[in-house]
Length: 545
Image (cartoon, rainbow, N blue to C red):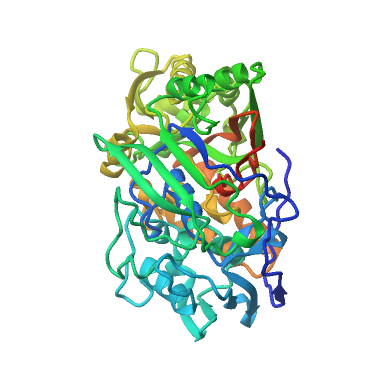
């Protein structure tokens, strides 16, 4: 996957772009039809409140139901030149990139008819980031874990349609941050300043400025069954023909087998997340469907619970790392459609290095040597308990786990036990710190190395390894901060390269693979865009007559 993205550090110019429909040239609207049915194995993890949602599907819903100040041009590389207007029509950075002024789009209304203005922007960030001390700052929410509070000092209303952000640092990818779902605008008529908006089958949501409105959200037995989105007649980009389809029904399936069957039978128009590589290859031979493939920024990595012995020992983590055979898993499980990954920053992104190459793949000589001082050998093997997610939140997790088990046990000094948990149980076990070693995945919040480099010390992983303890976590955090606040590109590069080197030595988490993105549709479906953002844009889908 080849891609070169370098973010401009200090943007001191005024950027003015047209306020009309921004997709019109690239994606001409197709004939409108009543309904498209999309199938998935995904579900909402917690809510679709911007102050709490921090999962792929939750964000998929937010970007369909709300809007941010800016957005990424569909199909682009998501670089600095690919930022487009959404609720803001122009913006200016000054004071070395620490002050940002946004001029807002006028005549945009919420579902109750109230006009959107600068107060709504301030309210959203005050609420979601607790900037004034009376809002929310959820422990498992994106704003806390993406450290909005280390970036944004305050948001000030300059006039009815001009809002100013004062930053604590000259944050290089600020516009990319503004494009992500965590920065989308809430409806203050629905979203209290100090209270989350949770599940509501009647369709109440803190969103309201997106291409769609939430008509219904149905759960059966506590599990998501389907969600219905209907066209927002007041959408700011409606004049350009968006959304292209009046209604989207999203149906949840319990397994990839059920999802593939629904696609084959014609029960659904689109299958997106998570089909297996084998199923995708089968669909490629089916002349009644189309397989869409695009670049991917999803990564998967291995986590060690360092409150459980012996994973607090760096050399033990290094030994487990050396026993991984990435090529084996991407070839045997994903049939060569994914790529081995040797850094927490994906290949093709600025500042990526192959830092974890120092351990090799299936380097059993190193495994044996590193474990020997702890008394682990062929007669007293390291007992490794690997957990994996079993309900389709990640692709082919059980098959992956079996490959990792085989490769570790082939070292002769590791004995592996496997346990699968469904996604809600998996997330709870992560929070409780009860999984010795486990697989986890990451989709980018925004496209920049900053959004990957923090994962080895992310507090929400609850690994007993974070930005305050131990020293390796502190040192990683310091390098990450140096990279995100650097005022020149060479300084950013130096910080991120040092960070990757340190992460490869610490092995607090270990990169495994980098994905592509795949969807399967009927031949009648058009408008699928699969790009580096990994955003699924329902509003671009349409049925060709």
